[in-house]
Image (tube, rainbow, N blue to C red; front, side, top):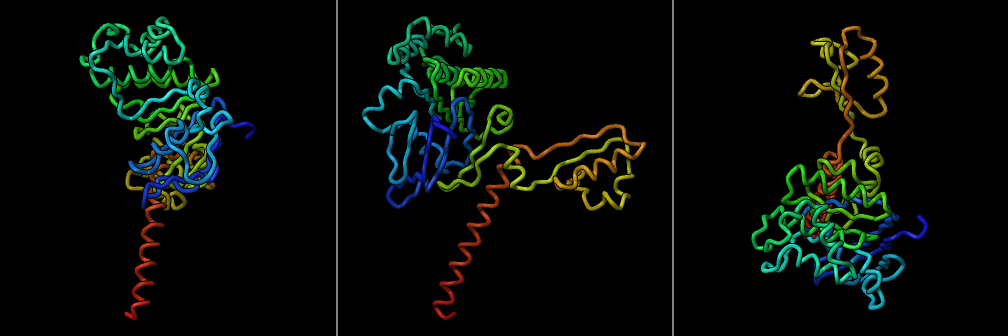
Amino acid sequence: MNNPLVSLENVSKHYKELTALSRVNLKLAQGEVLGLFGHNGAGKTTMMKLILGVISADDGDVKVMGVNPSDKSAWHMRAKMGYLPENVMFYEQLTGLEVLVYFARLKGQTKKHAKALLEQVGIAYAMNRQVKTYSKGMRQRLGLAQAFIGEPKLLLLDEPTVGLDPSATAEFYQSVDQLKTQGTSVVLCSHVLPGVEQHIDRAMIISGGKTLALGTIAELRAQADLPIKIKPQGLNGAVSNDSLLKPYIDASGSLQVPAQEKLMVLRHLLADDGLSDIIVESANLEQVYQFYLAQAEQLKTFKMASKTKIKTNEAGL
């Protein structure tokens, strides 16, 4: 990837005895949307803070728009970044408009720009109300408006849809899609995986500060070798009595078919005149995510068991 907007090379970050990140590598292109996924404490927020320049890496190299974001000389680069933290907090006594104008002026933007953003996120009607009267969803929308100030080249969003209703969530992803078409790169952290898949170019799954997987959803599906779900309609009991299909049947009556055998099974089903419809579902983001987490947990359990066995042997037991 030529001149990535964000580059992390063998990056590690430690807090005393805790390793928050361990030898992480990432290259983010201009206009690319990366979904960053992991459980609480996996290292997602630490990675965002490194990219923002709030903290420095203990090992490895971090570059954002060609410079180390923690350097004093990187101030001009930070003006081209937008950030929404997981827990949004604003001055309670100020109005929504006053809050946004304050942040807009820090980035050299106007009051008119602030008003347009409030309109975009759907809370222009409450711009003159104090933030203390805002609901959680309204505060989240105000936070999104703050992150969108100045049409940033890089947008870091930590749990951006928390507190948003389905309509607001859909509007948020429309905004992300629009920014992407304008060349903005986005790193999006979320625990709410349904609905994210169609808006990201690649997914990065981390656990315990280590990268478990990085790639497009199609690439991660292929690496995980997860089965494809096939639901034939109109065959009634014929599927369960079919010797070729029987090995694939799950508890719900659907077929769980390895990817390399999909065409063979589909041809077999299509040859049956009783078939009225057929639904084919590849593993979704949630299933891919759970696979890699389970794989990491199995490896962790195996290592712990091996250590216990070694200690037992050393003790002569």
